Every structure is written in C-alpha cells, then in structure tokens.
Image 1 (cartoon, rainbow, N blue to C red):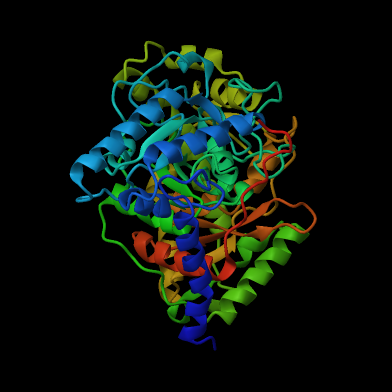
Image 2: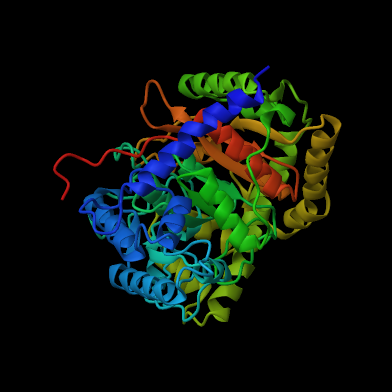
Length: 517
C-alpha cells in the first residue's frame, strides 16, 4: 500500500513547479508570463503578490489567441474589453494596498457563447442570434467577475449546444476550415458542445473558462483537449442568462487546465469553503461494465493504466459493480427530456431576454444540418423518434420519463453508491479519442457513441468530473477519465479529483504551430 509520504512526494513536484513558474515572471522582467504553464490559481496569487499584473497576463493570452486562429475557438475575442477590465483590476489592487485580494484576482477566463456577458453578443452559435447583445451578465459570470475574473471573449460551440462534435460552420472568423478544431490536432474535432472553451484551454489561450453541459458538453471537450471540468449536481448553479436546451438537464460548468482551478471556480460560483486533495487511501471507486462497452484500444489501454496507478496510490477500485437496466432507464429519460423541454424553454428564453425573434425564426436560420433536422423534425413539432425511424408525440413519453423512469434512474445511482460504499464511479469519459473533423463528425452514430458514458449521470442529476488520463498511443490526442459521484457530493468529488490529478498528472499544452505569428 502506498504510504502518505510517498503520495506527498508525488504532489511536491507539482507544487514546486508552480512556485517556480509564477516566480519567473517578475515586475521589470522582459520575460512574458508563461501561459503554457501558469494555472488560474497561480495567476491570482501572483497578481495579488504583485509578481504579475493582470494586464500583462491578459496580453499574453491574447497573443496566444492570435497564434491559433485555425482552432476557431472564438465567436467574439473581446481584446479591448478584456484589457480595459485587466487595467481596472490592476488599479483596484494597487489602491487596495494588497488587502482583500479577490480569489480570481485579474485571472483571464473565456465564456461559452450561450452564456450572457454584458455588452458582448451572445449568439448560442446560431445565425438568428448574431445581433443579440445582453445588457447583464449571466449569474455564473457575475459571480466570477465579482471574484476578480477578466473575460477574454465568447467561445464557439456546437450550434445551439445541440451536439458533441463542435463542427459549427457558422462562425468561422479566422479560417475557412469549418468547425472548432482540436488544440492538439486541428484535423480532429474539439468536442462539444463547449468546443471553443475546450480548445482554448488545450491551446492555453486561457487558463480557465465556462461551458454548459446537458449530456456531456463540458466533459467531452475537456476529454478531447486535455483539461479538467465539472458538471455540478443538478440545480447547484444558477441558470439565469443561459440559452437553454432542457431545464431539467442543463447546467453551467467550470473548465480549466488544472483541478485546483476547477475547485476555485466551483467555490466562487457555489459559495462553499475550500477543499484540499483527498487521501486516496480512503477512497473507493467503482467500475461498472456498462461504461466499458465500445472502448477502442487506445482508450482501454489508458484506462487500465490509470486504474493501476490509482490502485498503487492507495485507492480501492471495486470491479464489476452491477447497475441493472442502466442503459434502458437512461434511454427512457435522455431524449424525451432534452427534445421535449427544448421547445418551451427556448420560447421562454427568447421572450424573457427580448431577443426579437421567435422559435420559428430561430429554427429557420439554423445552419448545421444535424441541428436543423433535430429542430424542424422533432423540437418544433413536439415529436420524439422511435427505434424504427418514425416520430410520435412527445408529451406522453416525456410525462412517463419524469414520473417513472428518471426517479428510477436516480434511485439506481443512489442504491449503487450506498450498497458498494463508493465515493465515485470511474470510467473513460468517451469510448474513443476525438473524431476526425469531417462531415461524419456530427453523425447520429458518433453522437450516440460519444455520449454513451456522460449521458446517464446527466439524466440522474449527479456530479461528473472529467480529468485527463494521458495521450493516446495510436492517435496522439488527449483521453479523458470521468468520476461520477453521489448527488450533492460535488466538493468531495473535487477533492478526489485533485488527488487523482496528482497521480495521473496533467496533459502538456498543445504545441503552437511552427511559423504562427
């Protein structure tokens, strides 16, 4: 069994590296802040200690954004607004004389473009909303800005957040290649629907950001791009100011290059006390065979290696945990909730925020073929697909999902955690690495494959945490590990994730292409 001194020795190099990296960019130095290595937590500490200025850090991230136009990570890169906010932050910190430094002091972040940022367009990645400019921040953005964060801009996404590839051809301001591209291999997709935030983090265009998650949308992009993310328990974060799919399933979620940053952002948004990394010797992780179906060789090898390292660090891994009828229950909940609630929730959103358009006008303008088909064939007529390819009225199926199947799914999860005394379930976030960025990326078979593991916990309303588990052997892009915990266990899950990161490490930043300006 791994001893505590050995576990501390694993963590020590990370802590030492952080201290060295923050210390290398001192006032008066000609060396720019090292965006490849700095985390949001380190930036906040350095700005508070006056080793860095928010303006210098913001300039460095904006420069990196200009080096990676091929990623299509942004709908709006708000350079002028970000620099004004950074300079104002530096002025406030100087006037305060070092007292009462906020937790995200001067830290640049990015925000998915279906989450409102005051004075910046909020397109949700769709043409009909290209001129919609909210006058107030979404509640989650407001809390981060009150904690000192600086918004670099709004990131690209799968249109209307209705997909997992990020292949949105509507907003390609920087290149003719369609869709958001993987930071580590731009021939591959960035994942969705929070594609731009994932790509920006993988490329170190920002240390942290916000996405939204209905069935995997903060976890899949971080699995593809090598970042950490949290889908919080249902209802943990406020939903005001976010373009919806399903009020039952939707949530904002923090995404970051390091688990300490996920902890920090969740702490700010939720208003909870700090947590330290858990002791893995007291952690029980369960492996459910359902989540091991359809794994490709790279993912299976990386997952087996990750489990071996976690066992070596003292965690107890319980194999072959039974979850009878998980697939059937999940199938009876997922599409009925998302497709039925999408109509009423979007109608209410368009009216509440005075966008000036109707849901019919929104649907008429949809550019992505997969999203267009979903909206015009299912959402607008209030229908659901059947296994034989027909469509039937959605209301009775939705009512059954809410009254019977979702409560049964939630009970199954609660009973599984309790009966096996588990802190979390552990599994690959996606069964395969990022798909090629081509016409098939947004196909229905790909959609069903890539949400296989992220969707059930989403429908049950439990928290899910994504961490990198290394690069694939055959395809050298990141692969993701997910931990799903009991409902309401978000802070315990984050503490476990911090400990897991100290064992598995973080994925190195994506390389900047040779000759990038």
